[in-house]
Image 1: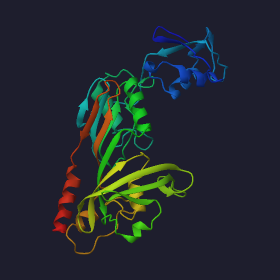
Image 2: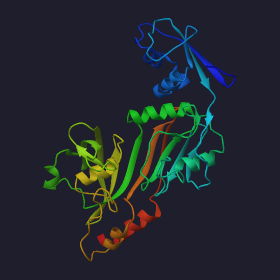
Image 3: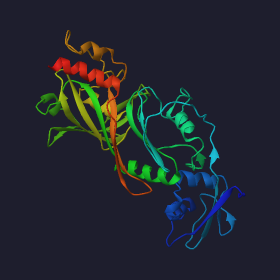
Image 4: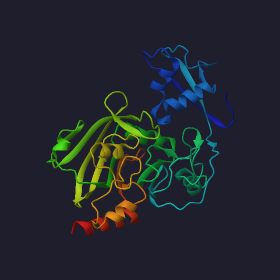
Length: 340
């Protein structure tokens, strides 16, 4: 399948290719084309790949020296509507944008939230100035933060940026630090923590939480700590400020699993203030200043405060910080009053 609205990528399979064509193409496709395995699979399924001039399928046999032609259609317009929603743009260039997302905003449209999302807002912000990601004129979401978590998020504007950023997040080389307000104060001297599976301490009183995470057996909207199956997850936590019955903590992700910080802190017995899903709404001591503010806090007190990565096109190291949003700053001030 070819048209005037496409361009053709040509390359030759190198020595000792995998037997299946889809795997051989994925291995040898030029890196500068920035074609992911999933994109190549779609192009094969759509009949846009020829080998030695003949239409090819994913399971065809591959041989050294085969000449592969891939028709790359122009990026298609997406059906998701653009919406004029205000955004806090921390950085933007031709390839990517860094946003300080407010709490309450969903990142990507879904059946329960088709509008009002970050993607809807970005489509309006870009005004059609997108080179295309994965064959569509859409923002490239390479990582997400929960609806009710605030803070920094990087989004790709081109295939090159999407490919490069996704590789960094997959390799866990992107740097992410979160600020959170949790119940209690993580302490290396706490015998309960010392005896808890998955808990260890590193120099500098850094709490390391290492588990596997999987969907909860009975509640599919939740994640749960497990020791078999699931996905490996590592979070490091240290105390920034002891607030008595609470703490301001930093959390650094080694992996980036769904709800990872929230599940890990709950496992450690230091659930996030305001978290309605993972038990963070436990009461503070009665009559303690700051307790009412904590009890009334309407979301998990979690903020993506720092984000660092290598620019996927220029190769420049990039680092960004976002201050605490007003609601968390007010909660912190109330709890600081309790600590004095």
